[in-house]
Image 1: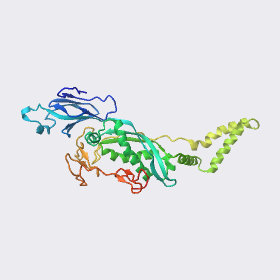
Image 2: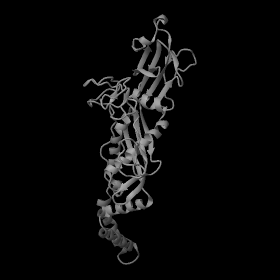
Image 3: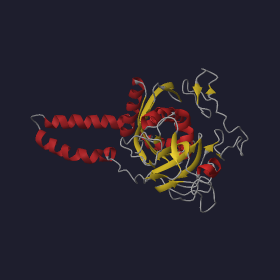
Image 4: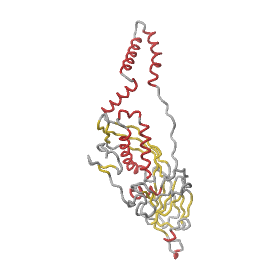
Length: 374
């Protein structure tokens, strides 16, 4: 990393030594004097975005680049001929780490309200892990780094956690009627929640490759009800439960001294595994995780990581900004969205619950505080 305290930054490069930096800025504060002809080295799994006067000028992929008017055409208008294209620019470079960041934590800080069809209003806690990857470095820098000042996974975890928890509450409300059936639906909930969040994360230039729900924790009395229901699912009905208890009593009696104890104990020991194998056989998981691939947001065609335009439909892949309301890609310096007509810099309002006054994400379906449908 060349950050020497000299007048010009002649060589620009960055090594991620911590393993947690999503974005690194050169210089770290303010604007540096970057001379025409400076060498920019971008490594594999990196992208570099050149900013001048607070605006993105160009995005560079892996390789060695010379910063001059040949590869930054717009800079021709900035430089003056009397300086022979050698004057320094007050600018900065952002390096984006394009690798997959794994094992990021998410969870409910406070219990969220869930309206159960059998138990009424229940307060739930949930937690898990998720993996992210920067897929649109310019959009990510404009949305989170530039406005929120987030550079590391630790800083972005808390921000994304609020989005995940809100979508978790909506997904639970639309998918599960009662949490008594939760134990058999963890995988289904994880997959559905991951699909629901992909659109939210794409607004930040991020891809969500995996999301896992490690646990959903209801109050103690509700946990007891779930345990009882699970036992009933194994034994089917009380009659079979009584039969098993009778068989266990017979086995215990056979093991005691006297009578036909030794023979009976051996016979029951051989019979018991076969009797209950159908109830306790474990199903093997099918399939496996597959890494996500880049695709065009317009036509869905597969793309290489450094593609600037889709080879099938010609859609531009370097996204400067997205409309906060409809998700339409915005052109540089756009003042209004071409799809919905809303101002490009308009921030979406929070959605306030009419019953309890709790604040939720703009397009939330259920309130996090009271569980009522918004």
